[in-house]
Length: 114
Image: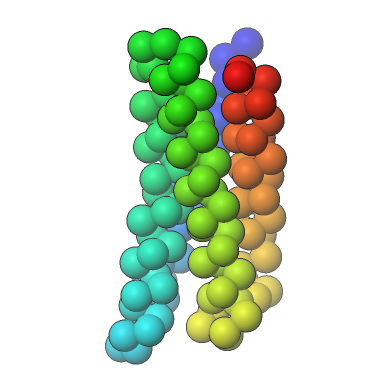
């Protein structure tokens, strides 16, 4: 059975991009936070995609470990954006929940393949 994780992380990255585009701001603080979110949120899928062409099990685990770290960072930025009310928390709840699920999945894959 083929993993749907590359598609799922791509869809997550797409949601992050759309969120950032919809919330362009003149505030330098908000713009900085959005750049951080955009960078980490799109990096998850990029690392999962790289892992699909890994040259070894060690390389595979390394790429997934990076993806898990990026997912944690993304979760952090989402929480901060909600807590500081840059974005209403109700708008961030679904994407934050998805970030939590991705963290759990990626962490599990890393543990199983070590």
